[in-house]
Image (spheres, rainbow, N blue to C red):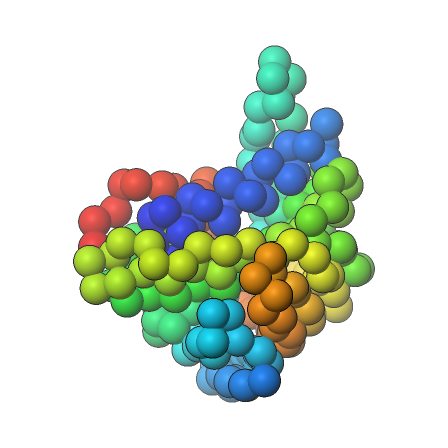
Length: 196
């Protein structure tokens, strides 16, 4: 899941990275909506993998007075069963969690390994957010280091692996194979417009 502030926060991290570039526990989900396996915890909590989806595309960004095009591949791993609906900006479920994996570039994102926290071409980020029953954000953390390896980026799926270390010292790693959702990057980046 991702709340409005979560969606906005994760997308903001990605957009900031892209704008600058242009300028152990385990759980898994093997259903038809994607498969994900994650080891490790954040704040002592294992990452739920009820549903996984991806959004791949481009959007127009401003960097000062310069307008450009940013490309991203975003994987959303959530404890909710409606990850695509969340990515489309149509849902903000209570008690939701989201692990968001983002790779941004100045050209369409392709298979490869992308270091987390690096500015420039091939910027990457992993963020984790959780919210309570009233949709208030209870956790919002972005990995400080690690890497994302995309083995495949197509119009129908995004697959790969990641390892991420957060400023708290928490470490997680995993694999994903996410179907691409019919959503835009701008709908994913919506912030503050959906009620709980």
